[in-house]
Length: 321
Image (cartoon, one colour):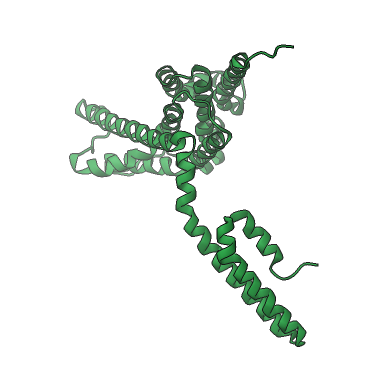
């Protein structure tokens, strides 16, 4: 026979430490069950229901406050696990992404200024617009910097060490979060920023190009290859994260892994124009051409994981019969 609060207590026991259960959760459940039993014994059915509802509200309030107080400790333990592998991964990823974004923005501004100097295009470019133009260029830089920064950060964070299951799950979770961010950037943020950059630099409204169209606009206008490229590119953080982890597992040396991953991260965006040629020539469908770069990297990752497993099995001491 179950009593009011039994299920709530079982749920709390999975989320809270034993000390918190004894100090906070158990008293709330005990008060709920005691007052509920007294109300039933006296025949006050509606009072028993109000007691049950109030006890549930009190339970969720206490549980929420307890979980909120546990967040700093959980985050600290998560970041410092495996000799601070995740903390290093996040730090290196953020630093590399920031450097790559800043480099891209400065190069784009320099290229635009050189083009204007030679009268090539954007005659309205002026120094007074420079701060705003820099902001508009950031989303496009993030589209390149996030996957590369995460991949290099993983190799730097692991430092050639074998990762535990918790670290592997954390790397995958970080890749998923970055992919969600990438989808938002590629689908809406970067196109809007690109169009705003063009309009401001030209000091007039300009017609949208393919890179200024949102994901929905690409689909409605029949730009199938670019439409699928946006979808495929949004999971680039996951693809390159797994690739970087595989490289780290095979090389087990940061000085070797970083150049390999950096080269792969730089080559990744250039793979889309390369596989776009068969689409242009009509040899492959747009969807297949857009997803080919991811397929190529997944295949390389699978091969490296196979090599890493073989190396690990060879390192194990052989059993003597």
